[in-house]
Image (cartoon, rainbow, N blue to C red; front, side):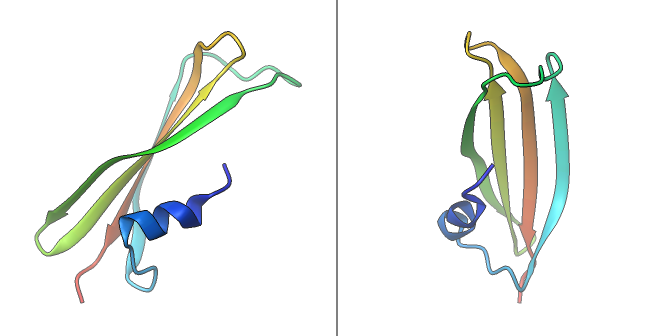
Length: 81
């Protein structure tokens, strides 16, 4: 989904010190070729641990009926300076 730079700005991450800490996919059903989907991307958590900053971004893909198709969760870590 487009707009990831906006989330980097909102999280306040310095990309020179950031890395992807994890990526998780939860499937309810497969995508159907040609179907229209809606994507809602949100910041789920932001927290500090051991002088590192963590941000969790969740993207939910739903069909035209509103039913969940897939949920993605990405964890970003900004290492301390």
